[in-house]
Image (cartoon, rainbow, N blue to C red; front, side, top):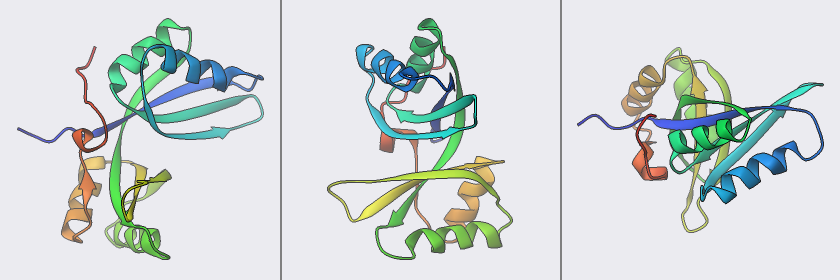
Length: 150
């Protein structure tokens, strides 16, 4: 059985006071647990990128609450939690022709590694490139409870 790619929920927000709190409340009230959050903004809009359990159900709950939400496949990489760890991984991707659109990371509190999330053009190509470089990638089940599309 093929391994499930890691999926991220993206939520489009107007830059208004309290909108991010409303997103977090909608997820919290729905019983969703966020593993990572990254927010990027422009003058009028922002995008919250969220790694959470049950991403399909989370997207549906956010849409039901009136938010524009979508799913995207991303690559999750285990990076040694030491100076230069991320640079080593990015160099491996760069030498193999994989461009990173954006990235964010979180540290496992009980481990000695960080998890970096990369959005790339082709996640399968990136995963193969990282595997060839002996860099460990994670599957959805390593990070959250994968759920069915719907």
